[in-house]
Length: 185
Image (cartoon, rainbow, N blue to C red):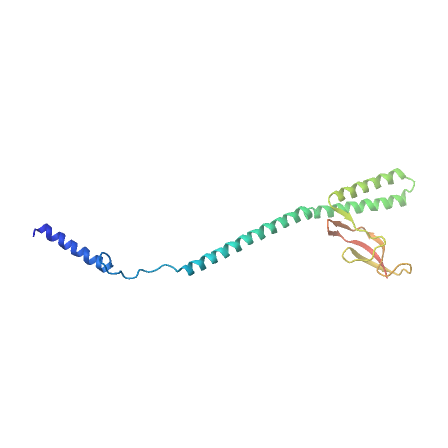
């Protein structure tokens, strides 16, 4: 044998022995390779990921709805502070009308002008969702009325609004300012 043949034979033997150690090239079964996760384990993982996905999707949908409601409330009630300030202007105008009737009962054009401004202000407030709270012939309701005092009145049932001290207003379905009233005892 030549030197070259000897080297090739040695390499062949080394390769054969290496393949046998690894379980290759022989007819013998190889050592069991590590198996991956079973079908049940994979199915459980898929179910878990699907559940997490559906929960995340539901949470995103709830968050979107919550943000939509908050946006609608901001649009509906965001002007509340400004409208409360306009109620102060209305109060001053209403007091001016009462004072003008007392001090200048003969100056009808002046009083009529003030009343026209009052109607204009009430119409403007109404366009923005502000409505006065009705107190005339109404039963006292603490959600809408603030009792300033009680008076004895034989002609009215107890708990009936007698007089309005300061007009109350609603903004859409929320009390902007309760009506200040006197109540029959």
